[in-house]
Length: 432
Ligand code: EPZ
Image 1: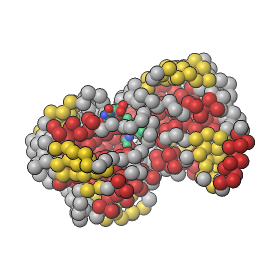
Image 2: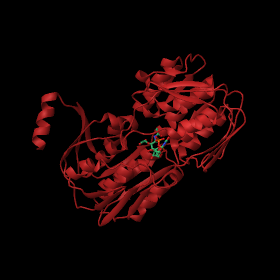
Image 3: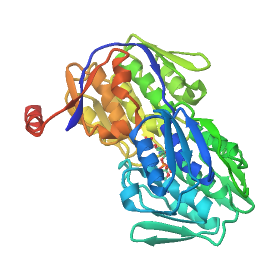
Image 4: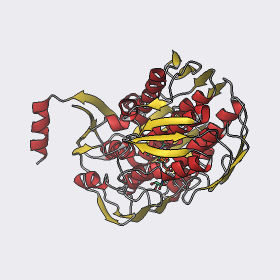
């Protein structure tokens, strides 16, 4: 089994280039289905979730040309089916975006329920389906496959009880060619929602209000190809910012949008970390033990829930007590068990983690329970005294491009090692 092996205690110095945003890419790639043309997309992160989505499009009949590892040309003219079986969707949760894209193109979509991160139990898509129904689709469930079809889609007013990134994306995709006006109320405002709207408008759609909680979509008869560059990944950038704050050092992140990092910057500064910005870089300087703070993860522009595990890990080493609450996901603290093995002092009560900062963590064999929990283990391992091994690293590689290369480039002692089975048992045995 492949694991990351980290020898902690090294301060981090240097520069990192931030990749394109995963959660923008996994929405924009299926959106190309609506163009029925050729789209050129740059700054795409070369990560597992993108590779899986590209593979699905190819199996659907699209042609994808890699100009380089981060630039794709996607030709969706010859896609032949609106049915996506489980064999194609099981590895990626964002495959549910194919529902909105295929519904938008064919007024019919039949997609098997997806996989993806398994925190918070089964992740519902009731808001998505209610939205499709408001546009005129009839929804049935056929052996785990969602079947959504309509004579034709008509615009409508759609109100989401709770802010949902996925539901906002999916309704945008389905509504761009629906007859008339669609208004999404209580829409998600994440940077990747704005990125998708910009991409759709470049294809000839008429989407206004993205980035606010009311998005208006005037249906158009057809869309066309375009060239587009994905925004930088604010969660990758935030992960590295917090890693430097926790492990100490001085690192500059390049190709970022500081405005997308505002809540993370504010929280780190509140804890006494130095953060300097230019128009496309952020520099984090940390040379002493940080202070504590309270963090509540909320939809954008609040503190991102996808940064909650990383921030909790940083606060586990801070001076004082902190409270981290997740206002988005009900059960996103499973990784705390792994941090406790390394000496963290954290109590979970409902939706909140009560953290008593400790002087140091010690290396241990831990597991990545999901993508951002895995990122938290990377941060903990880089700070801990001694050796940490992380298993289930495929979770991490789903969302962080060249993660070992990037961390080594700023001085972390990390490598990816393949452990044959017996070593595996020994490792567990030694861990006691
Ligand atoms: C997206 O997931 C992201 N994934 C998640 O990032 C992120 O944590 C989440 O948005 C919140 O920002 C992608 O973009 C691929 P939601 P999504 O719909 O769309 C409830 C990562 O680390 N809800 O905004 O699935 C839901 O249970 C991943 O990159 C319903 O009840 O999240 C949750 O409590 C992990 N019914 C809340 O809304 C629905 O139909 C927000 O979920 C949909 C959602």
